[in-house]
Each structure stands twice: as C-alpha cells, then as structure tokens.
Amino acid sequence: MRPLNNEDVEVPKSILNRQLNLLSYEGLQNYLMNSHISPAIIMRINEFGESDLLVTFFTSDRGRLKGVAKGGRKSQKRFANCLDLFCLTSLEYELKRKGDLHFLHSCKLINGFPGLRSDFSSLSMASYMIELSEILFPLGVVDKKMFELLEHSFYALNHGARNDALRIFFEAKAMSLGGYRIDLNKCCICGRDYAGEGRAVFRPSKGSICCLKCGEESATSPGLSPESIEMLGLMQSGQWGTVEELSFSNEMIQDIKPVLKLHMEYRIGRRLKTAEYLE
Ligand SMILES: [Zn+2]
Image (tube, rainbow, N blue to C red):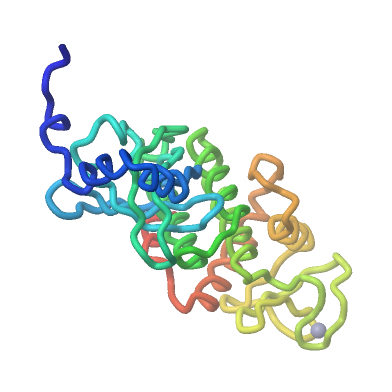
C-alpha cells in the first residue's frame, strides 16, 4: 500500500465537493463542457491563501488568463514540476466568464526551459519578454502569433541564441503584433516613398521614418541604414517566426536597438521595469 502523504490528507473542500458533484450525470456533463486544455506558458506565480497558488498564464487559444491552483503549493500529483516560472505546459482548467479567476485542474510539462533560469542574463531576458507581453496583451486578448513568438523565443533563449539579436527580434515582432508597427514605407514629413536606398531617420512621435532632407540624425531621432530598415521590415512582417531564420550583423543591431527603445518608450509611455536588468 502506498504511504499516506500530505496530498492524501489535505484534499481541499472545493475539490471534494467537485468530485462528489461528478457522481451525478449533470455534474459530469457540466465538468466536461467547462473543462478546457490549452498549451500555456506560466508567466507569474504568487502564493494564495494557505496552500493555493495564483497563476498567470498565456495560452495559445484564449490569451492571457489568471487562475487558482487549489493545493498547488503541495500537490505533486496534479501539478508535477509544471507550476514554475516560464514553463510550457499542457494546462487543464475550468472555463469562467471574462475577468473571473479560472480553476486549474492539472498540468503536464511540455518544456521546462531550464536554461532560462540558469543565469542572470537569460532570466532577465525571459522576464522582460513576459512584461512586454503583459503590457501589449491584456487579460483575455487572444493572439496565437504572440503565443508562438513567446514560445519560440523561449526555445531560442534556452538554446543559447544571441541575446542582443533575440531582444530586438522579440521587441519588433511583439510591438508589431500589438498594433505598433513602425512605418518604413515613406517619409512621414514629405510623404516621399522610401526606395530602400540611403539612410533615414526614425521619428518616435510619428512611429515612422523620415528622409534626410526632412530630418537630422540625433540621439532622439536615430538614423538607420538601408540594411537595418530592411531587417526591421522583415522582423515586423509576419513571415519570420524564429530568430534563427534571419542573419543579423552587429551594425544592424546597433542601429535598430535605440530605435526600438525610443519607439517602445513613446508608445508604452514608460520604460519597462525589467529593462534595467538587461544589457
Ligand atoms: Zn522627407
């Protein structure tokens, strides 16, 4: 016989009631109708009550959600190794109306991304990606592409991708998915089409570039080479799913980094809290 452990002793009342409820046909039907499984990335975990956890998670099909894992601080059976920051899991939860807390039933680990917690720079980068995702995608706003971006970026970070390239890739794509794409097609002052030749200047207030006849390069309006503008355009377009598909030069990264920094600060209205841990 299996030895008695904590979990056997401390079954929360809400779970007990739920299990009893399943004995009726209506109870079982209700459970099956409201129970849902999504691939989910664990974004935040907080202690909740004596033995529960409050979990924020990003799903591919229902966006960012919040839920309670009853007995999550002790249960090794239902949430084995899954309720950890940045883990990709297959999460089973009960559907609730918008804005309500979801009840987490169980989860299975798909990828724990151990590399994200192994050193300070990876941990900071992953936290930064989570913060930007939270800002751009409020609770319940669904974007499958944003989920895929976060998932691919965590895979890349876990496999030791170049941090500076991954950062601008994530920023450009996330901002674009969030509705803040930089307009690279024409000068925002004279309206002339940008033909892909010569440097241009980024104007944060316009979210666009302008030609060198209409503006000068400065710290608040950084310049971009034609190669950097092309790369920024590629990152913003939907066709490149992973950072490995593009080849970045140091010059491109140096050009694009300050542009995205100014663009994000202008559109979001502040610097991200986690940004100070990067560099
Ligand atoms: Zn112009």
